Length: 266
Ligand code: NAD
Image 1 (cartoon, protein in one colour):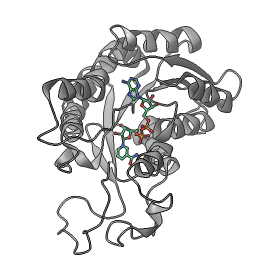
Image 2: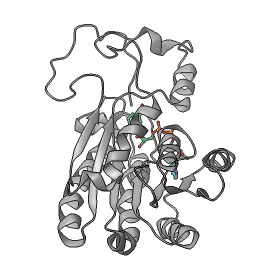
Image 3: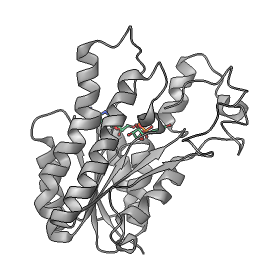
């Protein structure tokens, strides 16, 4: 058990990647604060973790004070806090024509400012535990697709936040801050989104080999497995790092030739 005795907050863990991370943390011996917008789904995740292993907080991350409530709940329920996983995000399409200031502010508020505020709120408890932060970004952080403009901006800023705090917080407080940038992951929501765009339910089986050499895209459980090393003590003093999780090298690759019909990635 790699997280025995640890207490972890996972934002956006009522479904998708966050749910898989929360469940995996519990399987590794941790107790978790499950969080998100969907109460019923959150209750189901807590139940799946087993008695005494998880508590739920439902709330919008842009609500004033919510980040402090998450930290307070971890400490009042389990007596400590060892790690924060900033996973929640609004995943939404927009381009230069459809991104207005209000939309951009909303995405920045939830995807970038809330992770910052949660780290700030958790600072004293994480310092006491010599704990760690894992931010879940996206490969879109480096540039992103034209129709993921606001989302990509928010993830780019999150990556700078990770590198900046990964340096200063570790030096000053002993708190490590790292980031995973997932590629394309098959979550329940992603299936629904593609269905809404008129694609057949098995769209992900027919992707160009250049983008899915395995013949499929990543599973939430695979991101969860990769999250554990950043939360456990064995990763030692590693901080300020960003790891891409895709099936091909994301940086420096020449554009493949078979890209004509690829649906939008997150
Ligand atoms: P999802 O849409 O399946 O779940 C999002 C979670 O965030 C839910 O629990 C939801 O309740 C919560 N959330 C959303 N807006 C919120 C708000 N305003 N306040 C509080 N909670 C809120 O998402 P996912 O696909 O599992 O993505 C999880 C993370 O992984 C995100 O940071 C996303 O950017 C990143 N990511 C996903 C993919 C992918 O292909 N699925 C790829 C790269 C990166």
